[in-house]
Amino acid sequence: MANIKSAKKRILVSNANAERNKAIKSGVKTSVKKVMSAIESGDKEAAAAALVEATATIDKATSKGVYHKNTSSRKVSRLSQAVNKMA
Image (cartoon, rainbow, N blue to C red; front, side, top):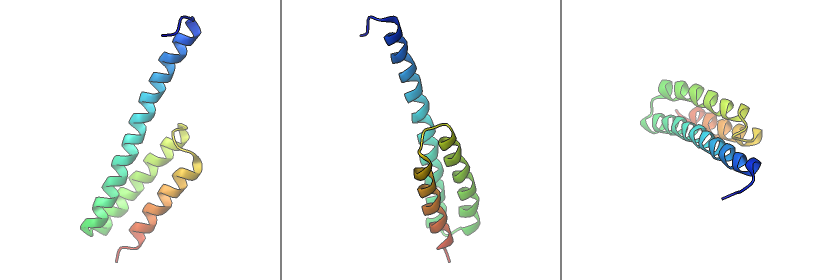
């Protein structure tokens, strides 16, 4: 354990940020799973609705600094491509 006051604070702040980032990433994963399950079930309307929600979730994660801009773009692109491939 750190002895210096600022180092102790950094540990606390880092842990808090890690917990926040973990929660945000978990939310993104959940929304992506909803899109994929809608695609697998063959429901195009539900997949499109889930895609809008997932895109918003990913964009929020990017604005908070959890994901890099290119990472979020790649995720959104792959999801929308999968939804568009549905017949």
